[in-house]
Amino acid sequence: MAKEKVVLAYSGGLDTSIIIPWLKENFDYDVIAVAGDVGQGKELEPLQEKAIKTGASKIYIEDLREEFVTDFIYPTVQAGAVYEGKYLLGTSFARPVIAKRLVEIAKKEGAVAICHGATGKGNDQVRFELTIKALAPHLKIIAPWRMWDIKSREEEIDYAQARGIDVPVTKEDNYSKDKNLWHLSHEGMDLENPWNEPQYDKILELMTTPEKAPDTPTYVEIEFEKGIPTKIDGVAYAPVAMIEKLNELAGKNGIGIADIVENRLVGMKSRGVYETPGGTLLYAAHQELEYLTLDRRTQAYKRQVGIEFAELVYDGNWYTPLREALSAFVTSTQQTVTGTVRLKLYKGNIIPAGAKSPYSLYDEEIATFSADDVYDQKDAAGFINLFGLPLKVNAMMKERNK
Image 1: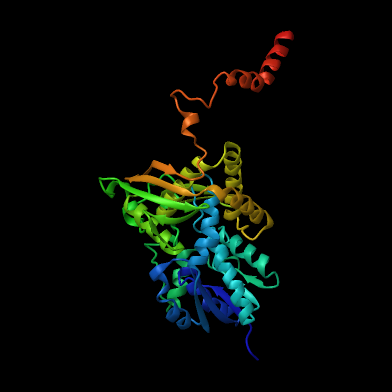
Image 2: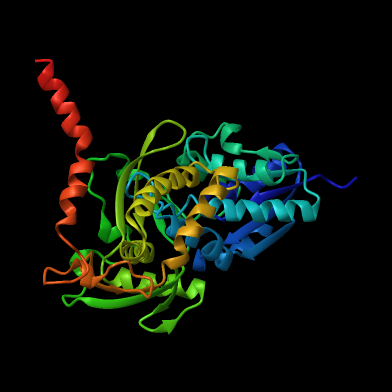
């Protein structure tokens, strides 16, 4: 009788390297590994051989980069969604695009379960599982970290070594990292103490430190169409190439470090250092263009939507009616977010250097300090009288009741 199949979210890292033998030892499943390429780069090269060597019957390495950018990154940037004022959601929105492909392959292969290597302390378990529940509620979910007797990354290393499995970390260099096209996260080791300054010279991979950035500024112009970046310095870029180019420009100028003690969904605070060079630059440019093209009330309300959107994404609620409804609102606001933003990049700083749009709501003739024929300053008196009437009435009431 053929064995039942399980699809494993496979990265080749420490956790998933030992999960393949663990699944075979404890469930006797036929393990199908799936690696979603969201921009890990060279990390993917050894996975084909490694997965089979450690016991998988098959491995899929799926190129999800363009879908990641167009369907997840761009809508989140358009929303201006930033979690707790710092985190640009690099891991958060990579999980649903990977989980979506896990579900598609599980259906194709006739698998009965999907397995992931997220820990019971983290957010990723929620992100993977909510996506699976939304897209394939019949599939069983296996989360080894909530089941096995292994208690630490050190014990994982021992488990791997006992089975002759090569893992990409040692007990001395044991940062937990997550890399994709958008960012690189660092957690664990010395970063677990919030008082410790990160060893940036040691950990940074996507960017340089501000101290080592060029002594002369870099000017960059980013062109948008309906809130989507299309050109850099007049040159058109496809979605994946766009993020890669922004990473290059921002990274060499020391832009994109976020050191945050964040509130995890599961109730604890955690400390992470995130490298998001291109993302930081893209958010800044997009915001500058919205300052020019959105009216005051829409801009103010959209900021609140951005906060809610970020929390939904962080919590794994991508495939939900509310996220979809918020995206519909955001898409509506982006119809006039077209134009060009010029920025000056200098040693970790992004300095606005100009913006223009055919849909600009800025009218120099109205805003000017020089003489004009379009704004009658006398009109302000009646406006202030009506706008301040509730304050005046309240003050009069207080005087009567002294």
